[in-house]
Image 1 (spheres, rainbow, N blue to C red):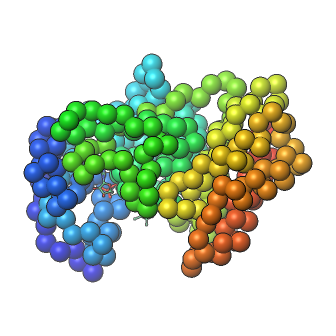
Image 2 (cartoon, rainbow, N blue to C red; image 1 turned 45 degrees about the vertical axis):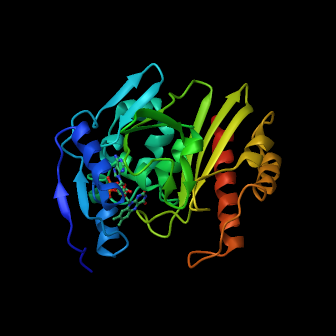
Length: 286
Ligand SMILES: Cc1cc2nc3c(=O)[nH]c(=O)nc-3n(C[C@H](O)[C@H](O)[C@H](O)COP(=O)(O)OP(=O)(O)OC[C@H]3O[C@@H](n4cnc5c(N)ncnc54)[C@H](O)[C@@H]3O)c2cc1C
């Protein structure tokens, strides 16, 4: 299918982009890499009056180390993240997740801002941002505001971003020496969206888990933090007995819906498999 007719504008700076978003409201769609938006438009699932192409705006392509963490500009592509030594060293969970995002051709163009704005529940970065409780920076007519990832994902493709706001950056906390990050997912074919995925951030002191944030993708309408399973790990060493305790606790955290991809039981099973894998990996590194 072809997208219906639309207007196109490429603002030179942020104020111009914000003015256009305010002027057109729900009729405008931001265009970043276009890797999701163009497909959605071609399927007739979005019919914007105007596309506001933000790729000409300076200052959205930087990865910077700040006092608060690593700030990734909205227009940073998946491929740039994948080749960034700073991301590999300071935000390893994000870095581990990038090769799972689509295929290289898409990673060359698609952006972190597009992924976080779309908030596909099967996407990798939303779950990573939730596991790390990253900060999402939005700019709108009333100025700039920061939203914690745990307050950002509101529902299926629904976020705290208002339609006249631009997502300008995501700031991730820097990994500390007692943290272990493990990203894993199950797919039918490499490059496909995940059937189920887990972004796990563990804090381990003298071999004992002192904190665990387990964020699942492809298991609900938003990325899901498995809080009961995370709590069940605290104060324990990762071993087979603990894996079983945590797997049992997962049932309190996850309520997947059965669909074409899998049954409720199947999805819970995948989530348990990923949890066991990550705890075995943790056991090896602890
Ligand atoms: C075949 C295929 C497979 C894919 N597989 C995966 C996968 O496995 N995992 C995965 O995570 N993704 C996958 N994707 C999606 C891909 O990662 C996209 O690049 C990404 O989701 C969107 O980034 P984009 O820059 O292309 O955004 P666009 O397509 O330009 O925009 C996406 C949405 O976000 C809005 N938007 C974009 N940037 C901003 C901003 N800065 N502020 C406010 N709103 C904004 C747009 O208006 C639009 O609604 C796949 C895509 C394809 C085509």
